[in-house]
Image: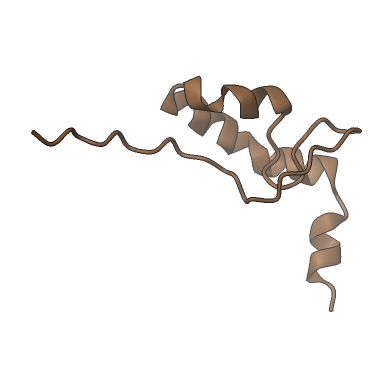
Length: 72
């Protein structure tokens, strides 16, 4: 009998895993160390709720990053 495969947990991981000592955030995805550690045990609803905040977190933590990336 074939066992059904559970869907993979959604993840904002960008494979740029650098934890910033000043902000406590991963510079790639914006999650905290605690969130990263708990990610697999969180419900999909909780993961989605956290992911909804990550863009704002990253913009608040690194306000000049988007501007620097946009400049030629």
